[in-house]
Length: 97
Image 1 (tube, rainbow, N blue to C red):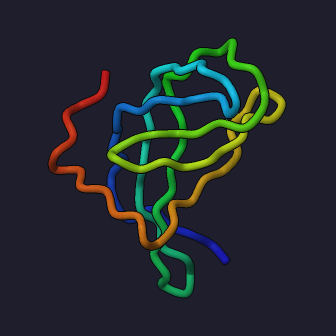
Image 2: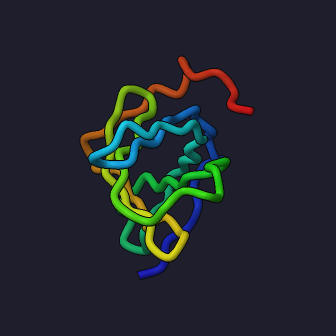
């Protein structure tokens, strides 16, 4: 199954919290829509502008009123697809630096 990009990338200010700690760090979430070869739409996202020193482990990513679990493994974030029921109103989001 091959996916193709459908829209431009949207950058959203976000906060990462290491699970089980009080460590909070700012980052940016980049989101975009992709369509599978079967026509099903997916919202993909990736974490950007995160501090390079973060330890591996489970994290909660908060952005645009959403809370999503993710993991950092070997210094990289796991691939994240947003659940179909998550809707992000990007018209209310300012630009992220």
